[in-house]
Length: 457
Ligand code: 2HG
Ligand code: ZN
Image (cartoon, rainbow, N blue to C red; front, top):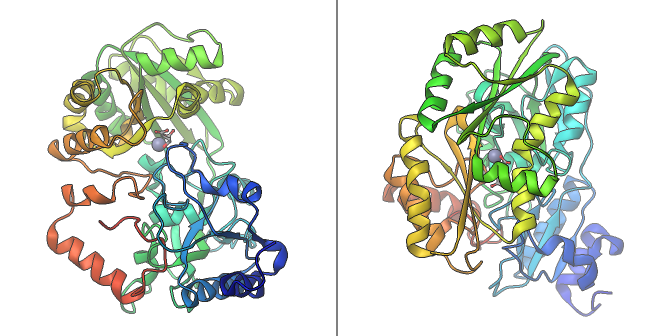
């Protein structure tokens, strides 16, 4: 039970009700460590507001009593952005948005829907499917990841290739600012250029400018005929060349992910299954979706690309089996240790070079570490996972991020900057741009109430 003489506790209890202010360490624990296990800190309280008004009241209470607000959705983040800072000087309050999980009626005319920040991606997908539409976004953490966090991080996933990242789906949103004010733009108008686009500014702001409480989500037509193919390839160059052919030959292409032999080996051992395809250095996992069966179109495109060997899955069960090989990487890695995760993006033309240079780059600073590389070929998004380096040793992170920047890439593609990469933002953003970001932060959150330490150096 929170100390009744603690003004922060009293303020929070008044804001969200006694039952939703968690002070007990056991109750807080699940909110204090991120998915990777690498980032963890101690929260004074975890609060679980029920609606936007309670979020605003909780933020105001934190601001009034000098506490930092750590917004959190499904806690599937991998950059420490949704859990307390390890070195938090001020009291930290985790603001869990999971109770704001309402989904409105789908508007068939605009193909949009209102979703609470706490609705999971899987819930949105099911809701959209029932209306003959699709979320247009998908990734492995779909059952836990929530829309507020997805928007705050501008999450991407495998289907970004066709439908864009979360940003492309935000037709509007509602958010609570650092002073408790609520901004809301959810009329869903496609054309609405009346001034600065504040909702757009909040997309990818990682909880540093406002707490996203609701989103107006742009859906896409549901394409029920799906086929996947796993293609073993002799090199990354061949994988990139394949993508080049598919782009023009295969309009139904929805995803093109990749993994390498080492990652597949780890996963097969973890899942205790046999390899479904001939051994190769590189594997590309393709998915096509259309109104009518795209299998023939896919086969024709693979033939045009000179591919002779591929496992094709045209029913849901076998398609999901193939995707578990790709999406299961994160869990197989987590089962082997606490990894350093570097979610980076590199231009297709430099992808092969980047992937070839990562192991030697890591070995130079962590000779005993093991590197697992996989990701989303379609947009050059590579998930560099390093096992066997000390969790607190940042040299691995710095070396990989510098390499990504050197080949013309980015230090953060879809997971966000978080606390994991804030100090390296300067590798990919110029001084003037970082100064502009800092000016926006100061203007909207002068006391640094919202997610301090995240994103900005
Ligand atoms: C994925 O693509 C996720 O599976 C997680 O973005 C990546 O675990 C990772 O590094
Ligand atoms: Zn990913």
